[in-house]
Length: 315
Image (cartoon, rainbow, N blue to C red):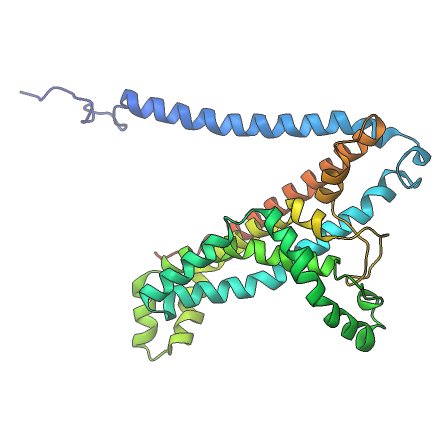
C-alpha cells in the first residue's frame, strides 16, 4: 500500500517538492520587497529629473556664477570626488591593517576591545566630527600646510596654504576617520570567514604568518574589502554636515590646502533652506548629479566584486 502524499514528501513521478504556504508567502514578500526598492529608486530618480529640468534648460546667465549649470556644478563635483577619493586612499590601508590585526594577530580579548572601540566611531554624529575638525584638528594642520607651501608650492595642489586650516584636505582627513569603522568592520568579518583549511594548509607548507595571510586570507577577503571600501566611499560622497562645518568660504581651485572648494552635499545643506525658484532647481540638479555619481560608483563596485566571485572557500 502506497503511503499518502504529504507536504513534506514528493508526489510519485514529480520532480518538484510540494511548496508550503509559508514558502509561498516568504517568496512573495521577498519579491515584493525587491520590487519596492526598485520603485522607490525610480521614484527618487524621476523626482530629481523633473525638479532639475528648469535649471538644466535655463540660460547660462541665469545660473549661479553666470557660466551655465555645468560651470556651476563642475567645481562641486571636483570637490566631492577629490575629497572622497583622498579619504578612501587614507582610510583603506589603515582599516585593512586594523582588520588583519584584530582577526589574525591580536589575542582574542584585545582584538574584541579594539574592534569595539573602532565600531564606536561609527556611532559618533557627523556634526561632532565637523566641530572637532573645525575647532581642534584644522588649526593643528596649519604648520603642515605652511611646510607644504614652502617646499612643494610649485605643485598646484599646495600652492597657497590656509591660515585657518579649514581646507579640502582637512575635510578629507576627517572623512577618512568617519569611514574607517565601515571598512574595518566589513574587512574584519570577511577575514574571519577565511576557510580554516586554507590557512592550515599554507602553514603546513612552511609559510610564515604573513605569507599565509598574503596567499590565503587576502585573496579570499578581497571582494569583501572592495565592498567595504565602496560602502565607505558612498558614505564620503554623501557626507554633508562635517564637510559643511569644516570648509571655509572661498573660490574654486586645484589647491587642496587653501580656502575654497566645496562639495555637492555641503552646497545643498548650506543653501537649501533659503532657496526658491530657479535656485532651488539648481540645488536639486546638483543632487541629481550626486545621485548619478553614487549609482555609478556602486555599479562599478558590483562589477569588480562579480569578477572575483569565482574565488570561494570551496575551490
